[in-house]
Image (tube, rainbow, N blue to C red; front, side, top):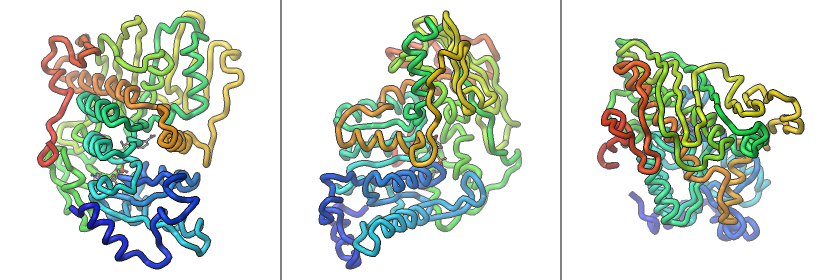
Length: 446
Ligand SMILES: NC(=O)c1ccc[n+]([C@@H]2O[C@H](COP(=O)([O-])OP(=O)(O)OC[C@H]3O[C@@H](n4cnc5c(N)ncnc54)[C@H](O)[C@@H]3O)[C@@H](O)[C@H]2O)c1
C-alpha cells in the first residue's frame, strides 16, 4: 500500500497546473471546508455524492470503489463505480471553478489509501453491510469522522466495536438513518415521544417485499468482470463463486452480506419506532418470529421473502414488524389514539394530532441531503449528529435479533420466544441464537 508520504509525493508529481491542493485555495481551504472521501459509489453512494455536490457541503478529495465502473446496479442502465463517481465530482468542480482552478479528486479501489491520507477529515461509507464494521472502525482509528449507511451493522458484535471506536477516538459518527432528518418523521416521532397519544402500548412497522428476482436453483457461476475486484468486494465474507446477482445492489438478499428487507427497510421503520418510544439505547426483552417464508433451497438469494416478528420492551410496549404495504412505515398506538407515518403521508386517530405536520422536502433539501448536511455541521461543531452510533446500533440490533429468529424459524416453527439480555447483548440460554450475534471475518480481515 502507498504510504501517506509516497502518496502526497505522487499527487504533487502528477498534479496538472490547474489542479491544486485545497490547502492553497484560501476561503475554500480546510479551515472552512471539510475534505471528504466517498467509499462505495454504487446505488446509494452515487445518490449521496450527487446531493453532497449539489449542496456544496465540502471538498470531495477521493472516491473509492472496488468496481471501476459498470452497468447493472439497481436497474440495468445504472452505470456506477469509481470512474463515473470521479467524473461526477470533476464535472461539478469544473462548473464551480468556472474555468479557474479546480480541486483534484482521486479515484482509488483500496479504502486504506483513503484512510492513510491526513488531508481527508471525514469519510462517507456506502458499501454493503458486511464491510461497514471494518471500514468504519479503521476510519475512526485513523482519526476520520464517519457517515456510515444504515443498517449501521451486519451483526450485533459489529456495533459494540463501532461504539467503542467512536467514543475512544472522540469522533463523529452519523448513521445513515435519514428519516431522522425528515421533517415528517420528526413531527410524528416527536409527537409520539411527547405523549400526544398518551402512553404508547403497541407499534406496527412494515418492511417491503423483495424487489428483485433471484436466479433459481441450478444457477451457474459467472466470470468475474475485468474491472471489478471481486476478492476485495467479498472481503471479510466467506468465499463464494461470482455471480452478478450476488453483488451490486442485490447483496441485500444474501445473509452473507446483509439481512434482507428486515435490515434494509427495518433499519428505518424500526429506528423510527425506537425514536418515537424514546428508546435511544437498549432493546427488547423478548422476541419471536411468527411467520417466515424462503425461496426454494439452492436459489441464489437466501434471505426471507415474507416475515412477521413480534417483540416486547421493558416498558411493556409491543412491536410487530411484518412484510407489507409501504403505505405504513411506522404506526404508534397509544392509550389516547394512534399516529402513523408512511411513504404516502401521515394519518392519525384525530386530525388535530397531525395538524401542522410539514411536507416532506424534495430536491436539494430532501432527507438524505439534510442528513448529510447535519453530519458535516457536526464535523465542524463537534456536536452529536441526529443519528449517533448508539441509536444506529440499537435499531440494527433489533433487526439482527429478528433475523436470528427468522433464520431459525424453519426448524423451530412459531411460538419460540427468545429472551434477550440487552445490557449484555446476549440471548438467555439460547446457544443457537447466540451463534448468530457475530460472524468470523475471513482473513486477512480477522
Ligand atoms: N439510507 C438509505 O435509504 C439507503 C438506501 C440504499 C442503500 N443504503 C445502504 O447503502 C449501502 C450500500 O447499498 P447500495 O444499494 O448502494 O449497494 P451497491 O451494491 O449499489 O453499492 C455498493 C458499492 O460498494 C462497493 N464496494 C464493495 N466493497 C467495497 C470496498 N471494500 N471498498 C470500496 N467499495 C466497495 C461496490 O462495488 C458497490 O459499487 C448499504 O449499507 C445499504 O443498506 C441506504
